[in-house]
Image (cartoon, rainbow, N blue to C red; front, side, top):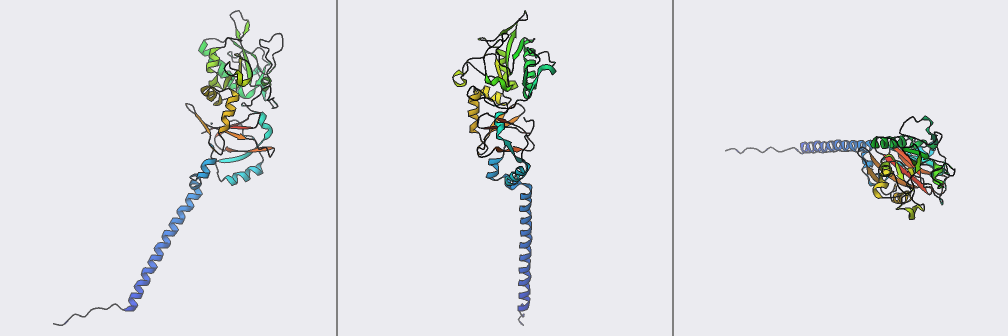
Length: 328
């Protein structure tokens, strides 16, 4: 029998096959590299990469705000660029603003030097709100809360028998129910109540307190400023008639934690922008609260604020600011 001859691959053909294989490998590798690079670019442009980093998490501040304080636009742009966070901006707040806001602590040893934004009762027609004089002045910021407080009292009791006897003035006339001289009155954030009797006379609360006001004023941003249980801290005797506006959620937290204003302002200093916020949740709102020490090396303090969430900034009248953010 004749033996079959074996086919031999030519050396030139082998070289051609190897070249084609190498080209295919390089082509596939190039496609994979291009695809992977495209994915990375998309992640960075969307901001997902920076938001997942630990440094971004420590600076994110996310409880109601009214008006954003104006700052130096040039500095603001520079700081916003360095934070690399499009949801926040940095504003300059004058250190003079330490003396303004609903959380300022004013006492005999800590005088008031702020600039109040006052209004009066002449434009309030609500029958539940009964001032001694329509010309009495108070901070415009607390007007809506004051009306809501006295409306709720009248609704729950079926009638209105409380007089707003005094607000920002010193009680030293012969017609005053109370003669306490308090520096805090000048802020416009306080009011005293008197009881309207069945004969129409107004009598003071001196030892007996209005239990409804003490139990529910917290829901409307107010506190009983000088409790009989905190006299050693406040340095002021028991004043069951004297209420102070601090705003929500601060009044709610103070009530739950049984803190007077002095205690609360010290308590809040543990929650700073480089650590963690004080978080608080109501039925329909989430809050985050930060203490920001004033920059003693400058005339202003840089504060990082959200662009979309509502916020307030209050001084504490001593050494810093309280930033309250209501998350949207």
